[in-house]
Length: 281
Ligand code: NAP
Image 1: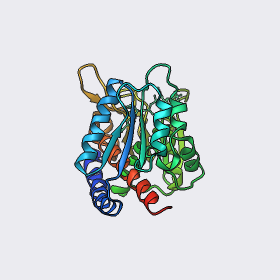
Image 2: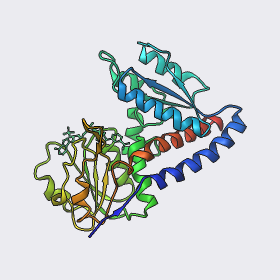
Image 3: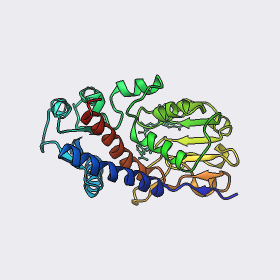
């Protein structure tokens, strides 16, 4: 069997089309573009991600406001963005400089502007199966599964990874979609024994090529969130794509699977926040 490739680009394109339409309507009504407050330290990977967000938002008529250069008061800056009525969403990019507590900074985000579901209020609501701003990567994974009409109700899903950024929210979103979910992590014994039962296997570990064909049930759908940049510059997933393609029914490629969807979902969540504020909801 050669797995069907679940490409992220068509999913991202559909989300961007929705974002562009809603941005035009919002800007005409509000008299200004929807605006993201972006909070990032000097870390190289965070700075590169910030530039990517600015470029992609700018192309669709969304504005990005950045921190004043050399800022040290991250909590104060996030609070200021949270209170500023011309800022619709707040996004915190980590890692922050040494000595800055990322949890304290995340707590300063107004939960109604929390476009990447970083405030515990939103993860808590997700766990309660109430409407919430979810972490964009996990929500992007759900959009991909919806786009390709992967059945979730009653499906046996295994999520490998329990970080609050990807694994845990993915598990919560799948539970909300009526899948039966197991969560594995670094202390899980006999990982393959558990993952081999999955109709849907979602992997967010950050270990290149850890998941091989022995972990995959024949015909399963495999979603690889792994984005591991190797010393030679290549990006590898957490899944051995070449070997797993021979066993799985469908597989997201890396790069080009879940990756392109994340920024589009951030934009879409920001618009939802902006529209709610505009209409006083
Ligand atoms: P993380 O915070 O380091 O969490 C990794 C998780 O994997 C932890 O729960 C850890 O278990 C588990 N784990 C580590 N080694 C394991 C092993 N040998 N067996 C089973 N579980 C293991 O990483 P993250 O932020 O969730 O990111 C995960 C991956 O997704 C990374 O490659 C990252 O680059 C990628 N990512 C992609 C996007 C995107 O847009 N596609 C966005 C964000 C992240 P413990 O909890 O026990 O430590």
